[in-house]
Length: 355
Image 1 (cartoon, one colour):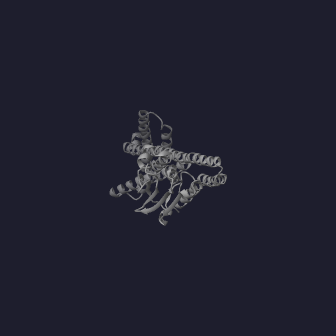
Image 2 (image 1 turned 90 degrees about the vertical axis):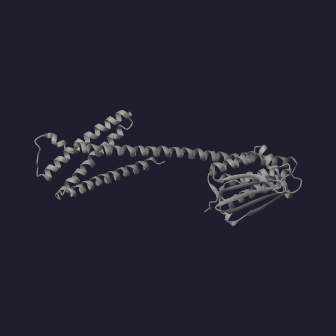
């Protein structure tokens, strides 16, 4: 938040309201003079009176700034006194000007006549003071609201970064464990290929801001880097099908939103199968909503019920928490059974077009 710019804007707003307010006062006085059929020279009296009020209220502004933090009772007493003193000064100037110009230098026999209309002017000064404090308190309220929103935004971003970066060590541990296993069984060529793919995948992961969203097409590219790593492990046992509509490819999605779902399918479905494991990724847009599905053909023992009993694992829980943090109530995250076996994870989020 740039406080210097905010202060400059508020200073400009004060002067704009000050000028418009006193011009409005002069206009009302002018309308009154037409009703009373005053001479045309009275317009000058009105303008000088408005100008006098304009000048007198300027030091009141700076004085109110000084006493802003005073106790409420003291503040009220000081504002009442200040308003009356300002009204009395204004009345003296206004009356003297009126007599000098409109009544050709008339002077009253009693000095108390100089305070004529001071009560009316007191109400005007009180109104000015009231408006000043109301606007000032409103601005402070807006400042606090802005600070609260900024604090919430910073906490929100920190939470998203934490959730997003939580995936890296979890995924890295699993991949390094697989590489270690390949080395132990003398599959050095495969292990070397996995290290290369891992390097590319982590570079992609670190180059993308966890707060910003990317197009689904780029997310699919990142997912394929991960799948290339897993294909080195499973070879022909892993088959992946991608079915994304052109409209869905251009949609904005949180970075690395699909990888933990794919990882979950590989860990609990493909790795448990003796035959070929199949993972299908579908994406479509319908009624301004983006529908993403990850399907697998896991064994019969692998079902939504068993996944829920395992508290959905780190990847699925992390994904749902990220969606909740990003979209609030405007998302859905469902886990269901596939036909004939396996699981289906469906994500529905608002459709936003990537540039």
